[in-house]
Image (cartoon, rainbow, N blue to C red; front, side):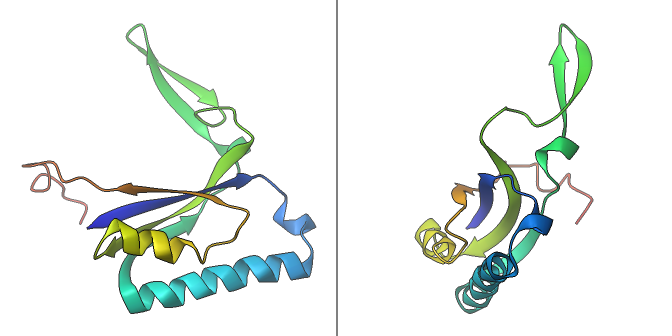
Length: 123
């Protein structure tokens, strides 16, 4: 099964983090990557720019409206993601225990839509 791992955290300026704090975050991601290599497959993963760089598109009264900023104003913002393929969602959840403790981690199984997979040409 495929699962999307969304990592949310309070936004902080990485450049203002102490070297020890930055190293702790990197060590947690390294441990996660090693564990994934042993128990699952990483299909994709990226760190994301801060919420101030986000743009949100909504359709309002038949028109497209683009606003600066994230989808929702919250204390925590999506900081990055991983797309994994694993035996089960339980395995993914166990792997996510290795991510930095400052993250709220949301795991969502990826659903297959019958007939849609044949229409994708970006793979």
